[in-house]
Figure 1: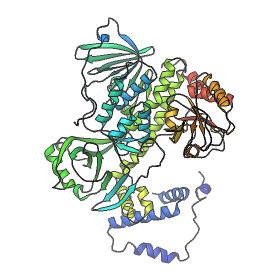
Figure 2: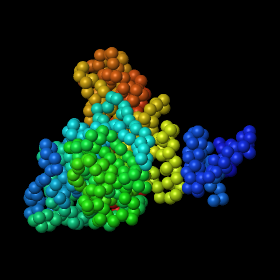
Figure 3: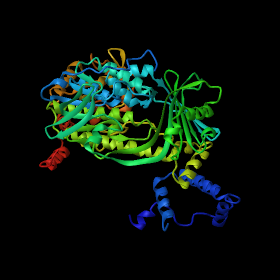
Figure 4: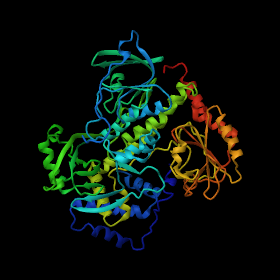
Length: 70
Length: 568
């Protein structure tokens, strides 16, 4: 699959109106959490967002993009 | 063992074969009188085939073992005349609860669809299943059931299989045209042929206990993740007949199976789960590991592997015995036609193609359940627990909770026996799909569609309103005159007058489930799987589809050509 096809579904351009606020919301959510709790939080968040997106293609491309370089 | 059921202990009787000067030849020999071997014998006997069944023991199974029988398995057993006895004795259930830690996360109701003769699931101990099936087997003079006959040698040749069998009176030999290995997870046949399973063994141990107790727990499947009485592990409670309850407790990989099996260790675990004031008695205890694996090939020349000898899955999901029954459903009619010379050997090749496909589907589902129940990495456990935590408040997460996806029959969508689907159909009844039931009437009396599909090639024909008794009779004669007789099952919409012998679609459910229009025509295999369908039946298309379904299609011909010159 070419890079162009890969990004056919997953939107990579900036979509957040207030990106710095959202970034801070994500970081703040981890405040006072142990590493285990942070992992629990991230897992829940991923599941909630994946369900909200509800598109197999987008989720598969997100997984691919997130795995890149790991 | 409870009373009031069929016999459970049987007597070894020497067969005249044991004193024959030369090994006696039989068309079909089945190894193993478990659910799958017995059902295979019944299916072949109903088709008029003589079969010999050998079992290394002389009782039904010890312990409940397989307990959950799915609708499709019950429909197959209904075709074999045992369905009613199973359902009557079994516990029909549809509700369940899922717990996480101390608390109940949610309750569910499978809400089985109305308009099926058989329930979605029943729970019934394997020993009852076997006892009822043996009772039916004993009615068939075609079945020669030999207890205490242990297979100790196999010679699988191109012209037949020679079996060496050990009995209380010593060894003897038999020759079989075909041999069905229904000898279970520890198959002697597999061992004697030196065949290995391919797949995965899960590093975890489970304690399985059958407990007899008068408890007022409801008839529900209760599943616990990380319960207080079994910290960090899982547990299952499910009801069987005769006040017997199935309990599964995950122990972890470090548990010592010998120690854990001892009543002095089992009873405190059960008391912690059930409470101190519940009186119970242990009926059976076992410790097992999960395995999700299968043989690479289900057919080796004249030997067919059916049931657990061919494939193994974890027990959560009821895919073991249920898929074994689907194996025999798939194989019996093919073997019968080949033995009769009405279909080529290539039809037998489709057994592996279709059932290995089904086994892979079962293994996939079973592996996913096992990964959810026993997460093997920190990330996997974090996601699992996240699903459970979210399931409390979020409906979507309940769909992700996987304590066993209950068994559904496979649709053989890629089978070489299928004809290409016709355009314009919607719904599940594509070529390769197992037919679903529907309530119908015959001459004003309530009956069920699957009863009329039976165990032969059928044409399910949704009649046009202009159809008359004469035109139907003409169609019936034409179908009966095909190279393989096809039985006409004509269905008329409610409110019309169906000619004698035709069915009426009482609640429009056959119409809905088969996406019918007047004139819609399904060609159905003897195992009640769709093999072709059309909006308008065309005699030439029907003949072609029948040829394919008999293994005479282009794909099979190619496969035969490839095989030429190679050993079976």
